[in-house]
Amino acid sequence: MPNTSWQHITFTMPSELWDFFWLNRNLLNDISNLAANCIQTIANKKNITPGMFTAIHTFGRDLKRNVHIHLSTTQGGLTKDLNCWKNLYFKQSILMQLWRYRIITLFRTAYQQQNLIIPPIIKAQLNNAFTFEQFLDHLYNKIWIVHCAKPTKTPMQTVGYLGRYIKRPAIAESKLKHYDGNEVTFKYLDRTSKTYRNFKLTSEEFIGRFIQHIPDTGFRMIRYYGFLANRVRGKLLPIVYTLLNQDNKTTLAPTFAELIQKNFGFDPLKCILCGQQLILTGFNFDKTKAKRLLDFHRELALFPAC
Image 1: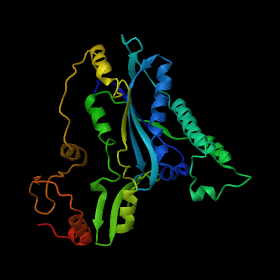
Image 2: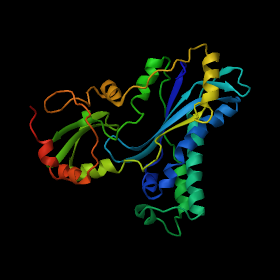
Image 3: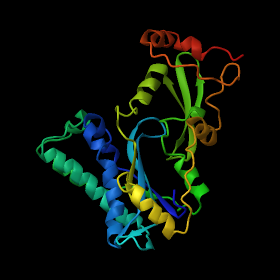
Image 4: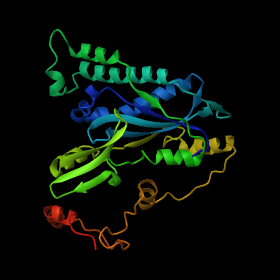
């Protein structure tokens, strides 16, 4: 990762649009490109190419549906002739307008091409006096939230910020507070009150909320753009490091256990019952045995620690 300033941006959308993505999975495949295009539109005016990557999140802190994009971009980029590095800055209001226009255009185009399934709760509101086009116009006239976090200046700050969003599960294990065999209690931050609240659900409700955020098979939640795009990074990244007077050191990627230990404060390879280190002895894909574990999930969850 180039050692330069990074801008971290969250692109959100009105809650009325969230349910569409569960009925129109193809739309979820487009929104990362639209967020990156907002950045590239601004960068193109300076004739430079920044490095970007995005993380798609479909969940809020309480596991409800909340589709949004976390995007990180370098605050600078390569000039088109690849000879210079130029700084780049973003205005939150401009990004909001670009993002809002692109998302509304995405839905408007899909509807006009008759490729859009409308959620029942929205469909029930539509009639001759309030058409789907007017519904989109209503959302377009709102102020959408596009949040620009304080730029990170050092590699440690950047990695620390990114670690909270890259491949993040819908809920961290540290937020799970209690399970009594019937109900699950977890903690989440209420953005309205700015306080932590406990949320209690039956085990079936909790599982239902959680698994709805599992991505489709083969779906890429993390995507790269600009000089970090897969097809050009091999050529452009060495140029970036040279222009920034930095060593292009290749380091081993941390293991999943190291990432979890750093970001969530517990060792996933430590037995929760006896505290001994877990050792991988092999893989077993026998569905029958997996089903037996599910049959006894309550007993396993309540099993006392050694």
